[in-house]
Every structure is written in structure tokens, then in C-alpha cells.
Length: 226
Image (cartoon, rainbow, N blue to C red):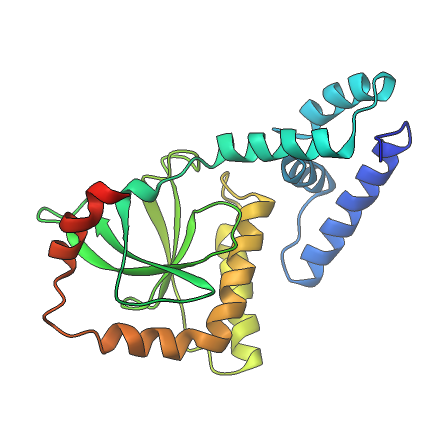
């Protein structure tokens, strides 16, 4: 497969479909924003960057494999790992979730609690805290550094209607943020789908951890082995 002179037509069609899908989900965006989000999903900084690169590709086609590898490298640069601030919680195993102890640095003595993320995720920036029943988006001071979290508290999720309402609320809260990307939205959607099914189980596990399990000690004992 190669990118051809018709590629930009397909790109704009994909952006149009994206805008329609998000509008149906209650997350209206402009056509220019749809173009930029689509460009970011393909590994470009924005639509203008895509156009500049596309003009080169037009006369010098590249293979799909090369294109995908370049997009992956761009994504790794955009979302470098922040796992040095997390420690794998060794007493719980899951096929779908990564379960960590997180240290909240803005507390004087350090605040330690469990957070979970979907194993198959794009950004490494979207987590759930069962203790606080909240989505944590590590996006400040910018999405690349991800030093601090943007917190979204969840309402009860016990029906399809409430699941949809929570997702609509999240979209409304983040829609104007300059760190919103298609990858972040995909990670939020995937996490919300999992929480709709497993949220109660995750919260029960968190509640039933013995008091003798000192998160601070486990964190300090394991942080050098990341």
C-alpha cells in the first residue's frame, strides 16, 4: 500500500466522519479541529504539518510500514513514559488492567493510593482511582510531561444510561482543553467501557486490601526496580 495523490481526499473524508461521530456523542467540534485531530492520530503535529509532509509524499510515495513506524515514533515522543512515579502493586494480577501504587507528590508527606489503567492504551495518561472514584488524566503542565493530574469525579455507573451520561460529562469537561487529542479520547472511552463492567469489582478489591499493606513501604521497596 502507498499514499497516492488521492490520499488528501480520503484524509478529509476521515476528518468529516470523525466530526460526525463526535457530534453524535455530544462532543461537537469544528471542521478545522477535526482535521487537526485526524492529523495527530496519524502522527503529525497538526493539519498544516500533514499538508507540508503530504506534498513531499505526493511525489515520493512511502510504504505503509514506514508510515506506521514514523507515526509510532511520533506518538512515543508525544507521550513519553511517566511510569517512574508508579510502582506495580504486586498482590493483584489482571489480564486487562495495570494496577499501580501512585505517590501524589503535592502532599507534604506523600499520599499513596491505588490507580489502574487499561493495559492496551495509547498514551499512558488515563487512569482510574478506585479510592476516590475518579478518572485521573496526567496532562499538566503539558501532556508530554504529565506531572500533575486533571481529576474527574464519577457518578454512580450502574446502567447504560448513566454510563453514557458520565462519558458525555467527561467530553463536556475536556472539550476545550488544549491537551485533548484523539488518543486521549480513545483511552478515556476504553477505560469507561471497562469501568461500566468491572468498576464495582475494582472498588471492592481496593476496600478489601488489608490495612497491613502499607502502600508507602511497598512503593519505596519497589521503586528502584522499575
